[in-house]
Image 1 (tube, one colour):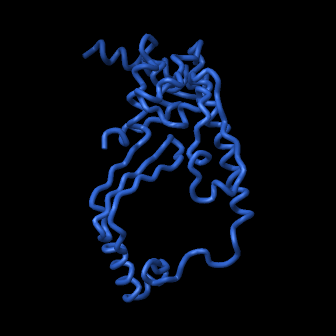
Image 2 (cartoon, one colour):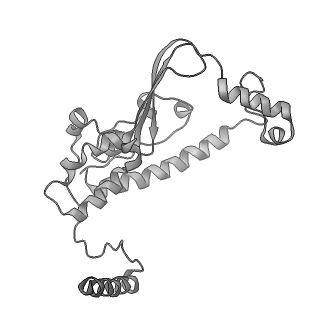
Image 3 (cartoon, one colour):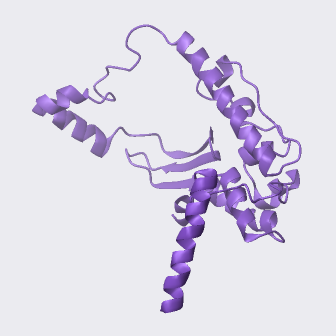
Length: 225
């Protein structure tokens, strides 16, 4: 027990020195000499099905908003940022540039936004305004009916994918004709990416795993679901 307490005291001294040096207790990167770890090869897509955001860091020009436009992406102009080496730094630069392109898209959408109400007022689909729900029993009952039953959907199955910040986010839905889906399968990008992580970090230091996880943007709760 004595040795453990001595170690804890020394640990605090080291962390205090880090705070003084780089203003951070735990995540100080100045001691890392190189941030270029195992690159993500474009060939990772077939076996590991790495999704667009990570692959674009390797120079793969694939973006669902360009390949299969949805919403208003076919009405706005934006570039697809690409890397060349596929390493941690390239993925970082790609994500920074993607944020700039997102700002560019938002500005165009604001310019195209029509005046007046943009949501339907059809009571079969429209949820009452929050203020009405708080003051009217009829509005509260209306919202309850819509949220609990919704509207009947045609029978069949569909897969829809969107270009989410982490990558391709897909939903496979099977309808039995009711207002609730018979089956829903979510294709989460984090779960796909974690399959490629061993290939990226094998042979490197444990500390390198942190940077790799950060640039492929894995959320473990999404994987554990």
